[in-house]
Length: 425
Image (cartoon, rainbow, N blue to C red; front, side, top):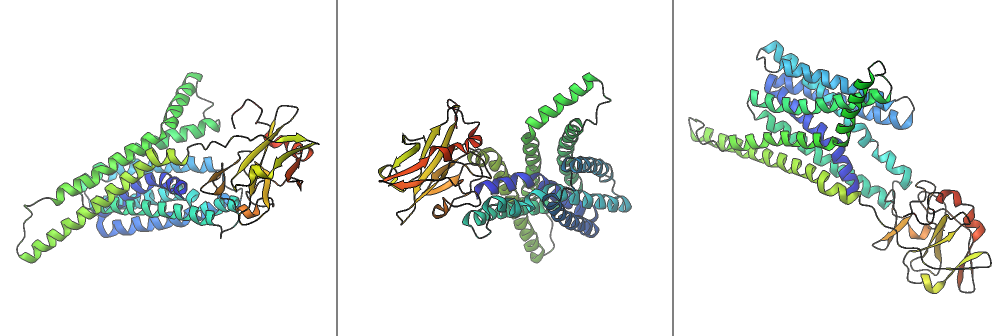
């Protein structure tokens, strides 16, 4: 669940800040029309994102990198136009700027959301059932991430609306410039990969390559800068809400002013919480979710009569046990054994599956978990085909031992080809 929360926040937070800022600027610039155009733009972007999610996963019509290149170009162009139009305080120009804000909001949602919208499908590829606990927890994690991002967008938007026109422009311009630079660098990277810059000189191509490499390796820096720029909004809103010299004619007006300031502070607090939570996702939660899990060591087992023999005493405790046979070519072929709960039978299979390969399984809180995709196994179904279950292998239970034929293990040697003795699992 935590992994998908982090993935969702990281995928959407930059777009959420941009959408919140430009929608707020649209409302400041052109009020009713600004709210209308930015809302329509966001709605169209949302619809387009779900269509794109379907096309990416159900068809082969979409070249993602070329689509991204087009989006980066459109975003950069719209950002430049908005930076030119927004400072001009004339009604027709403000209306045009509001339309550009709506287009920017739509483009950013269309770009950022499809991968997240496809999570129900991509999770189902490994979990196999929408009713499994793992599937539901992952969806809940993604949903919580979406909620956090949407609340942050709302807080940034409402905060921007509470700024003065030129304050809103300055902060939004800073956010757009940061992300326009990121988009240009990402676009150049796509053009390099697609060999679209072959007419450049060797030195120029090398310069572009170094720029793309540096910005790609430090892509999170752009997110941190975006969050830092967005943090300016609640700070200004909070400071403005502390003003004591705002004029009023009667107590009713005073109460209205006080209430407005209280609401402004609440939006400011929500924005700070969203920004800090997003920063924490990148710096604290992501390392936790991507931390490598070490597999338990391979246990000793006897080799006799063409089989690997595991005594009942070795696996009677109900925990996951890992055994292996080293082939003549030095490849370690692993298999796992676990006694099934409330049963005298055993779950036995390769320490690998058809979907995730030989990454293996580990035990956590009494459950067996796939190391690669974090799917929790139903221990009762280990030994049967399907989903991320361990690959089924032949075995025999006889004379107080589990006998796994070496010939049956050798059939799967290719799966463990990268697992030669002396290499870490």
